[in-house]
Amino acid sequence: MTRSALLEISAVNKFYANLHVLKGVSLEVPEGTVACLLGPSGSGKSTLLRCINHLESIDAGRITMSGQTLAYEERDGQMHERPRAKIDRQRQDIGMVFQHFNLFPHYTVLQNITLAPTLLKKSRKANVTAQAMELLDKVGLANKHNAYPSALSGGQQQRVAIARALAMHPKVMLFDEPTSALDPELVAEVLKVMKDLAQGGMTMIVVTHEMAFAREVADSVVVMDAGVIIESGTPGEVFDNPQHERTREFLRHVR
Image (cartoon, rainbow, N blue to C red):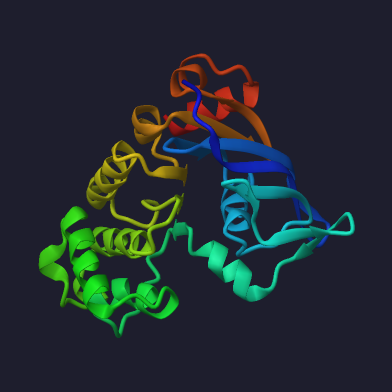
């Protein structure tokens, strides 16, 4: 049974001045699946994630989620940016986890997680706190709810960052190399949380250099180079029988 696309990226272009960073990128991510984006540094992977969440504007193309265009609306045959309040509302459905944890250092773990749902969704504090504790338990950090970020390891901080994103009940989670800033011995604990999310049916787009994770967890693997998608397929297809020479070269360097 074919699953309908939750997220559709259609012919997206992005420029930084004269630098053409995304060149007509198109991608569909069905609901409940995991897409892993691979490719060398500078290929446009992180920029694509930032465009999905409208941390970066796009210069052409369209991104839709659940059939609704993100960040832009069409008027008189032209695409116009939505009002900021509407963009912020759409962004609440998109969780994002960065390379660096970006936790508020002066807030406890629990306060970091409850802040956004309380302010943006106007949820009751008691309900938000209970849900935050459930999320902390899910990421294995229920006993750290009163700790400050400085008292946590990098892996623990990243797991808090994942719990914080989940607290907004997003439709899709974006991960931008979430383990790249971690010491090697801390990578596994973060990947385990991500695997659990995938098994629970969370729709995820993951920029990663963790090839074993991509092979095990991804439903689709997408390889980018110089702002274009050069190859995509199942993990078996891409890893075991890559069709593009640039893919083969990249995989030789990361394996």
